[in-house]
Amino acid sequence: MSASRSSSNATGTTRVRFAPSPTGMLHIGGLRTALYNYLVARGKDGDFLLRIEDTDRARSVAEAEKDILGGLDWCGLDYDEGPGAGGEPGAGDSHGPYRQSERSDRYRPVAERLVDEGHAYYAFDTPAEIEAMRAERRTEENPQPKYGPRTRRAMKNSLTLPEEKTQRLLDEGADHVVRLKVPKDTGVKFTDEVRGSVSFSTNDLDDQVLLKSDGLPTYHLANVVDDHQMEITCVIRGEEWLPSTPKHKLMYDALGWQMPKVAHLPLIMSPSGGKLSKRDAEEGGLPVSVRDYRRQGYEPEAVLNFIALLGWNPGTEQEVFSLEELVEAFSLERVAQSGAQFDLDKLKWFNQQHLHRLPPEEVAARSREAVEAEGYMPSEDYLADVAAVMQDRITFAGDLATDGAFFFKAPDEYEEAGVEKRWKDDSAELLAAYADRLEATSDGFDADTVEQVLRALADERDVGAGRLIHPARLATSGRSYGPGVFSMMAVLGRERCLRRMRRAVEVLG
RNA sequence: GCCGCGUUCGUCUAGUGGUCCAGGACGCCGGCCUCUCACGCCGGUAACACGGGUUCAAAUCCCGUACGCGGUACCA
Image (cartoon, rainbow, N blue to C red):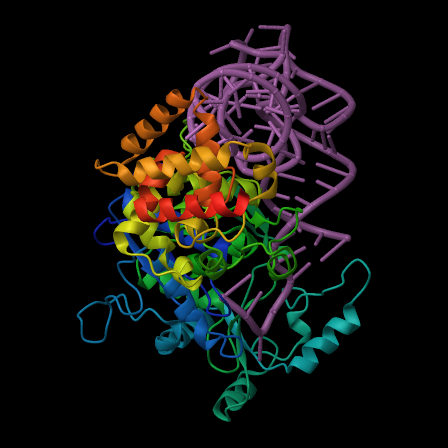
């Protein structure tokens, strides 16, 4: 890709957009498309727009837009223009509004211009008539006959009807659509920023409906009109759009508009190879929509990092990136061309990596919800102390509530295997003595003190420190594994430790 | 069916004709560190879909086959 060959707009600013359709929850693939758009915009000091493509009134879902906005916000992908950001009526900005349903009067004139100039036509066929045509022509080799150059002559449209008849139908308000008049035997070629030169023959294209009988545009018309009016310089979208790009090219050419650069991203696939679907989410518990990630406790930084690397790589060996670092490193030329399978293990690893890099106070804050859900109400400071000693051994912030449960409530039982292995005949006596010393010491209860007292006692009794360390861990946490005992005890504090050690002496003898 | 796009370790990928008996990461296995468990560090495992070309030389270029994915709607 050549950054210098940037498509033109008035100011020469790079302008890209994420244009989701509010038909469902924000999908992880959609988030990645949004991310790549964002990265290009921020990396080039350009504009990142959000445009809601709600031209299908039947499929639009009310909560979907909220979910999309919420998902982007969760990840920190802020946009410069979009619903609620710029382009409001009277704002003196020609780019908005950013919901296609709010710009519906803009499409018909363009469709009519296309008709007037011979690049499109009116068609009056009913769905049943179209289906009849398909049924008649359907063969094994051609299971889905097109409404196109070959068949349009036999259909009911402004190309076959006498002019007066067409006019009369229009005047009567008869149901009609506007279809693109695809030329015959013509090659359509364009350069894709990630795939290079791509070409199609118009013979494989159909006369795409541009304006539906409800008066609203299809995606194809709307995206061309909007991208042009919004001065988009590069269209970055999923690979599923590649086959319709030649239709868009035909429209840009017919309208005398410069087509933005296009970049088609490889798809994200399920671990089993197919399309990442709702089924993967429901049956495999895989996070598929952004809200799944949120619910399952993933950190937004990790999700972004993970999907950024799913289909792109920096050409260096760096794997862990902050959003800012991604902005710095990203370029469309290093986007891969083949689909990538989702790998849950790697996602978890990224989550861990980002969690480890966060300050303990932040880990604490992010674990709060899960911790309180378990019924614990630790103070901010205490939770941060817990996070400090636990964060290197958890995958999710919420693990603090489970793996670290003993920080919030005394163990009600002791891990059997641990007791078996570590609780010796002298453990009770040693631990009791340790507790007494800790109680007597006038020094603070920091990790060093706790350790010194323990080692001194071990020396006196002429036993290895482990003879005391392991029972102490068992007593205070109920487990044989976890953070270093001394720092763990320091976090728990003197009172809890003494109580728990004495109780263990009693229970385990 | 047709059209398009793709195909390097199980997975994500590096690699743009020689420096590749293919490098990194996740996972897995082993070791070190160590009070345990993690973290971290060190080491190991494992791949150029297949067949033809082109070339002194191909993972890299060309053709074909296979396979995968996408598209083929008055959905986006």
